[in-house]
Length: 218
Length: 218
DNA sequence: GTCTATACAGTGATAGAC
DNA sequence: GTCTATCACTGTATAGAC
Figure 1 (cartoon, chains in turn purple, blue, brown, yellow):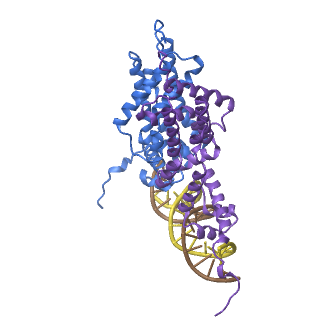
Figure 2 (tube, rainbow over the protein chains, first blue to last red; figure 1 turned 90 degrees about the horizontal axis):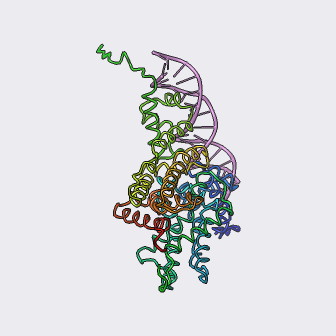
Figure 3 (cartoon, each protein chain N blue to C red; figure 1 turned 120 degrees about the horizontal axis):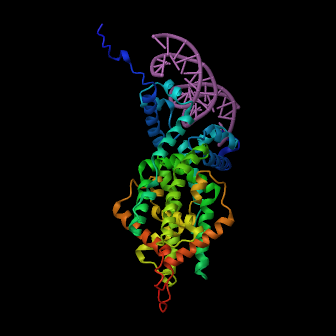
C-alpha cells in the first residue's frame, strides 16, 4: 500500500483552463484562416500548450473544429425577437431588423459564415449544426413574433405565408450588406447608410402586411 | 520492333489543348474540394499531364485558381435582364426572378460561392473579381430594366430607390434557398415549391412599385 | 514542351520522459 | 497531465533528361 503523495484525485479540473485556452485559440485561427488553413501546431502555439495537450483534449482536428463552431454558434442567440417590446408595431419591426443586421454584420459572425460555408462540402454535419442553431432559430423567432402580431390584429398575414413574410423581412433588411462583408469588399457598414435603409424596409413590410382599418377603403 | 510510329507528328498544338485540360480539371477540383483542399498533384493527375506542365502554364497555385474562377464567372452572365421581353410587366419580372434563382441555385454556382467566400479572407482580389463579374453585373442589369419600366410609366420608383428595389426583388426571390444549398441541407429546390414562391414575390413587388392608374384612387 | 525524379518545408498524429 | 522529439506522409515548387 504505497500511500503515495498528493495526486490521488488529480483529475479533471486542471485541464479545464487549458481546454478553454485551446478552444479560444482554435476559434480565432479557424475563423480567420479557415479549417484547412489552420494547423494544430499553430493552435498549440497560440494556446501556449504543447500539441500533445491539444490532442489529449480533442480527439482530432475535426472534433476541435466542431467544438469551436458549436460553442460560438451557441453564444449568438436571436431569441431577441421574442422579447421585443410590442407597444409600437413599427418600433418592434425596426428593432428586429436592427438586431438581425447587427448580428449578421458582426465581423465574427461574418467570419463564421465564411468558414462554415467554405467547409460545408467536407463537413456537412457542422453546416447542419450551424443552420439549426443559427438561421433556423432566427427564422422561428421572427415567425413567432409575426404570429403574435397577426393574432392581435395589427398584422394581416395568411397563415401559410407567415414563414415567407419572416424571411422576406430579414432578407430585405440584410440587403447586399452581408455579401459585401463576406467578400471582403467593405470593412463595415456605416450607420448613416444602414439607418435609412432599415426604415425603408419596415415601411415596405408594413405596406405589404399591416392590417388595414376595416372601415377604410383600401 | 513493333513500331507504331503514329505520333511522329506528336502534336505541337503547343499548350493550348493541355492548358484547357488543366483549367478544366482544376476548376472541377477547386469547386468541389476548395482551394486548400486541392493539390497540384491532383490537378496534374486529373488533367493527364505532369505536374511540371501545370507549372509551365500557370506560375503557381494562386494563379491557377484565379484563372479558374475568372473563366467560370465570365461564363455566367446575367445580361438576360436587359433582353427580357417587355410586353407583359408581370411576365418580365417573373422571367428576371426566375433566371436569377436558376442561376444562383445552379450546383456549380453554389460551389463557386462556397469556394470564393471561404477563400475571401486570403484571396481578396479573387473575391472582388467575383463580385464585379457576378453580383454587381446582375444588380446593374436589373436596375437598367427597372429604370426602363419607370421611364415607360409602368413602375413608380423614386430615382434614388431603384437600386434598393432591384436588390429587394432579387433578395425576395432567392429567399433562404441558396443558403440551404450552400450549407448542403438540400440538394436542389423543387419546382413545385419555387414556382408559387416566385409568383408571390412578383405580386409583392408590384404592390410596392406598380404605377397606379392616375384616374384610380389609391 | 513535356516528362520523371526530387528537394525541402510543413502536416496531422503518436511515443516516451518527467 | 504535460512536454519534447519524432513518425509517416503530403504539400508546393524545381532540376535535368528527352
